[in-house]
Length: 143
Image (tube, rainbow, N blue to C red; front, side):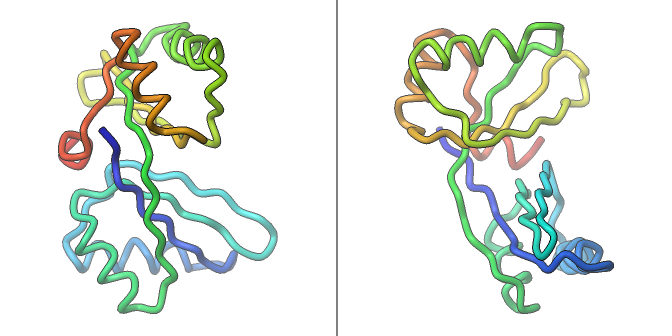
């Protein structure tokens, strides 16, 4: 129940992000979700895409440093307190959230939150035991 996330390390300078999106577009890769974190010198672009193999190959071919990380995608009711409900469950069982980012599905009824946990297997078990919908990678890649 894990999702493959692509992380791209890039210099923090004008045009670099546009270069990545151009490379992915030319390779026929659709971005499903992304998060960009930066420092003064470099950034980490985290991506969920529809075709990981194509994306990795295209980015590496153009000289980008690419890493793969396993994350967890959780469907959350898009309402006040929806995220808090999940975070309270995780907190109660001492599961640490290293980072997260979210996107809303077309229906507007649910959001999908991408989580990176310190203990993915325990986090997934706790979520499932509490009837939280954890999405499979193949589902997330096609959203």
